[in-house]
Amino acid sequence: MNGSKTKGDFMTTTSITLQDIHQAQDSIQEHVRHTPLAPSQSLGDLTGTSVFLKLETMQDIGAFKIRGAMNRLLNLTDDERARGVVAISTGNHGRGVAAAAKKLGVRAIICMGSLVPENKIAGIKALGAEVRIIGNSQDDAEVEARRLIDEEGMVEVHPFDDVHVAAGQGTIGLELLQDLPDVRTVIIPVSGGGLAGGIAMALKSVSPGIRVVGVSMERGPAMIESLQAGKPVPVEEVATLADSLGGGIGLDNKLTFDLCRDYLDETILVSEAQIAAAMAHLFLEERLVVEGGGSVGVAALLNGLVGDLEGPVAVIVSGRNVDTRKLHDIVAAELEARANG
Image (cartoon, rainbow, N blue to C red; front, side, top):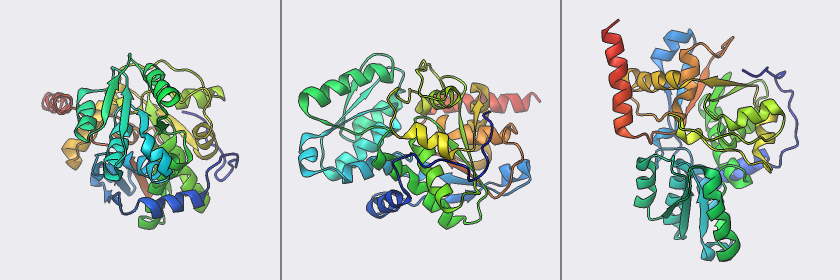
């Protein structure tokens, strides 16, 4: 865990504003859902305080990524729309771009590494986007994306390091403030930083005393390792249950490293076993299908990793796009463990 900053003691070097997030909310509201904020009795009983789950699983694409992707595409010029868009993705961003492109009539190509689960690839193809699998990682996929941008004139829709994308994700923060104005602690999955940074910036700009905690997996937590190093660093991308949180943040990161550095109070890492247990808990106790990356905040609560917890607590449950066979195996293992005491 990283040391907490003094609440409200953050810098203002980032190039995104609260106005950007409000504008994004105005732009995308007819295209995305204001998602439910559901009370969790099981987590409330465990922690001794009120806990709410912000269910981005209820977006049409099953994940929050539609917010940033839609905001980015709505801000394309006519010339850029005509050229089409390209995105690098571990799954949910690609699905968000594909859905936004289909709705707006824009050509989309999604470049991905071979570690992306097949169910996420199929979901993108079903929305009409072209998928190109290049190498093993997002870094490999980026080579093809750069070629499409440089040689064919396509327009990049970055998965996180973009003002429009981060502002779109930040609209979740505005919804939290509307639905739970007295929220004291917000727990957010951390990957490239568009989600965590955008939400944290929105929350802190309105109420600096809100504690914002970022959570990632132990296997390849690029943003957290970069924050610990004080600068963006390369991190090996490896297989993990939290596949949607995989990939680097870019050594030339222009936006989200600063957002996470300046607005997150602390960060936490969870293990593969803790992620699996959280997925099983959400399914068995809350009747929710949640992918590994969307479960990391709950994993932190289940294992008592958020110290001095003050409620009300909101946990961002960011996506549901998990392979059903994988979820079945995880739940079956949990049921067997319970049966054996």
